[in-house]
Length: 149
Image (cartoon, rainbow, N blue to C red; front, side, top):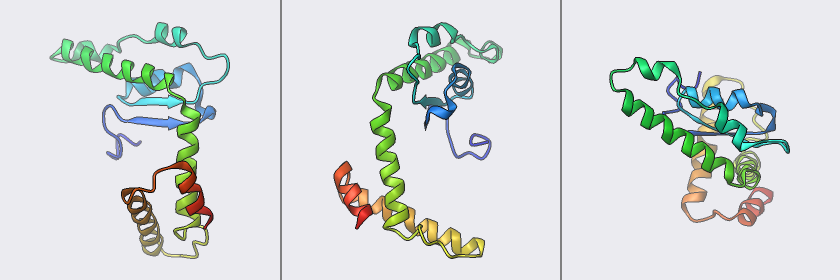
């Protein structure tokens, strides 16, 4: 749905929590051209995932097979590098940013009843959150202090 509505492009990464953990979800994401960074569980095996990854058949139906194979290999490489990162710290920063938008920029008490007023309020919150980061407030402790302020 994200791809159909053009909200996500080829090669973009989607960070998900443990609720989406399954080897097939990694494969589905790669098949649609996105990198699914799912926080792995304890019994996760990167070797097993790499063994399950193979070229989808639609690649061989394209006019330039080598180019499509190269794009696919880049996605797989990006997935493996992403899974080696510490996704829990990245996820906690994302949670802090969401909390900043809710607490500091008026999304907690959203008493709007029309679509236009909700859209304006949410757009303002996203704009203010972006401006906060643009002005250099990017550290985890600073974000937490701002959201509690």
